[in-house]
Image (cartoon, rainbow, N blue to C red; front, top):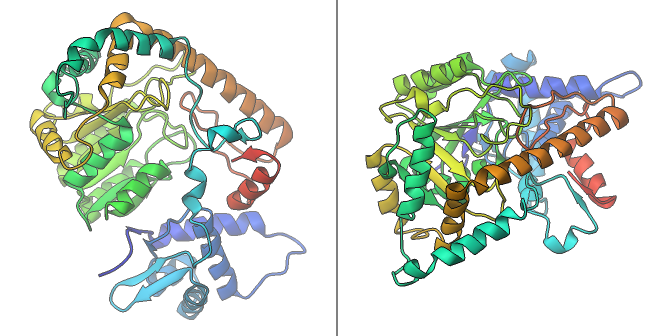
Length: 442
């Protein structure tokens, strides 16, 4: 059985290698042999996380055509990578990327910085902010006041507290998307929602189409579930999805699932417009693909003049194609591990049944806190504070990068918590290593 869990196309890999080559060559730089330059380029892409570990690489002939070089050169590069431990191969299964023993996985930087290190390190590696006080404290106090009746029950609510399910359903209905409580399952954060969805829909070996780049923690969750990721490159800048590529992938790969972030995409900041949303839903429906839409950033609009498009599920009135994932962790606080799934009632029943073998349910007290915030208007107050914090941070970071690093290129996102920067060919992994030594975590 092959050990690769995603695949990189020849054209996509050639594009990444060309961008890398353009940025790192110049007068006075001695060029290595072609096979060595190719091997080094692929190795850097793996170490910087731009090509995932356990990603199947194109066949030698396909990559040679895409790069306009000889197959012998590509074969020599692959052999060099195998000898260094960055590539594994098996006859009939192809070749896939690896990391030799002793080298950390590129995803290690995704681990949150320990709280005790916050005083000595500026942490730009985690897209999260401190709690929007006093609303966290008020929410927990309100939850404690509402707890006594629940304390007399078993406390086991696999689908979530009925009161919170009703409240979340009402919020979708108020936005023009009629929703019943039976269409909501409360989860332990968005990661809990995605874990449940992957186990129900994407068994080991199933293809899952994902944006490239995308939220690394979700991608790793899918790999560990045994899914085979099919990356679909984002369009340039903040223009969102490349619909032609999406239609091709959905048609040719026929993935069981597709995972997208339509609102202030993580990490590029792109906001998909209504026409893109409609077209992607139509393409997924035609391909028989279940479209999972991550809405965790949807409330983090930072520029007031931006008109938010309708939610993606608005273009799937029957509820047969789109599963929506939401969360309190980004809009409110990362420590508030409350997420939810909106889907057709039969899908929710299946998710709830499958959950019995995972985490059983979500903490009651936290659900009560979110319910109290939504019921009293505290949620809107807290999110307004969160937007102000994120806007101030974004503007400060944009000003600093423009002043100190004028050669770096980026588009200023209208919302979300990330800034996606082209570093002029500088290695992302090396920047991260140097940054940690001087007290800045990237």
